[in-house]
Image (tube, rainbow, N blue to C red):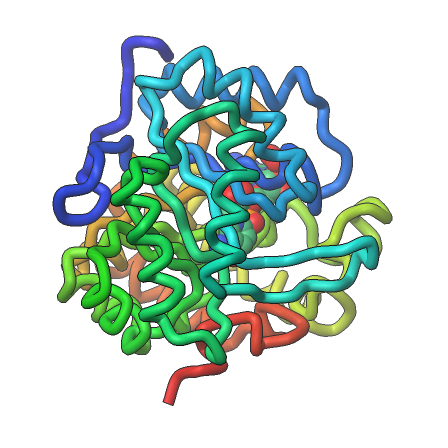
Length: 338
Ligand SMILES: NC(=O)c1ccc[n+]([C@@H]2O[C@H](COP(=O)([O-])OP(=O)(O)OC[C@H]3O[C@@H](n4cnc5c(N)ncnc54)[C@H](OP(=O)(O)O)[C@@H]3O)[C@@H](O)[C@H]2O)c1
C-alpha cells in the first residue's frame, strides 16, 4: 500500500493540505469496547502509509489517555501529520457526567494539558468540541485566537455548531474546519452548517461517517452484539425496536455494495464525499478504526463514484432512521437551530 496514496485537499481556506480521508482515533482508547493496542498502532502506521495525514483525538477520549496513546506516533511523524485535538467537554469520576466549558480560563488550561499529553509544542488544529451557549463566542473563539497568536495552535476548528454560530465564530478568527456528525444516517447538518461552511471556505470533517459502525452492517442490535464496555449499548439508535428498524434501512446500502464489489462501509464513505461535492464543500471524513485491514478498506472508498440512481436509492434513508443520534440532543448543534 506504500506507493498508493489518497489525494489531498486544503483543510479550509489557507489551511494545511491533508489526505482526503483522516483517521478517528477515539475508539483506540475508549467507547467501542476493548482495543488491541498493537493492532491500533499498526493502524496508525497503515494510515500514514496510505496518505492519511489528519489524525483526530480529543482531551476527553479516555480522559487524556487517547492523546497519550498517540504521543509516540506523533513524535515519530511530527512533520508528516496534521494533529487535531479538542477541548470543551469536562468529565469527572462519574462515568456518565459530561460538562461543557468554553470560558477563557478553561481554554487556556486545556491547551496546556493537551500539549503536555501529546508531547508537542504546537497543535495543528484545535477544536472547540461543544458549544456552551452561555459563553459568548467572542470569548471562547477569542481565547482560541490568542493561542494561535502565541504559537500554541496553528488552526482553529469547531464541532457541533450551527451555521449561524460558525459565521459568528469565523468573524472573530478564521475557522479552518467544522467537525460534526454527517452520514447516511445523520443529515441534520445539511440544514444550516454545511451551507455556511461552503460559503465561508471552511472544510467539513464528518465524524462518525459510518454511523458509529452501524452502517457497515457489522451489528444489528447493540445489546446482543456489543460488549458491556461499549457505549453504543446505550445509544437510542442501537437498541431494541430502533435497531431493528435501522438495520432494515441498510438494504440499499448492501445492495449497492454487492453490485459494486464493495463493502457497505465504502458505500457510506463514498456517499459523504459526493454529498459534500453537491454542496460545493471540501470534506475530510474521519472514520474510526483500530484495524489495518479496515483502514485499507476505508481509504479504498476514495475510488468509488456513486451513480445518480445509486444516490437516489440512498436518499430516503436518513429521514427514516429511528432514534436520535444522542440520548441528550442538547449535546448537538441541531438542538440550537431555529
Ligand atoms: N466531534 C465529536 O463530537 C465526535 C464524536 C464522535 C466521534 N468523533 C471522532 O470521529 C471519529 C470517527 O467516528 P466514530 O469512531 O464515532 O464512528 P465511525 O467512524 O462512524 O465508526 C467507527 C466504528 O466502525 C467500525 N469500522 C470502521 N471501519 C469499518 C469497516 N470498514 N468495516 C466494519 N466496521 C468498521 C469501527 O470498529 P474498529 O475500530 O473495531 O474497526 C468502529 O466500531 C472518532 O474516532 C473521533 O475521532 C468526534
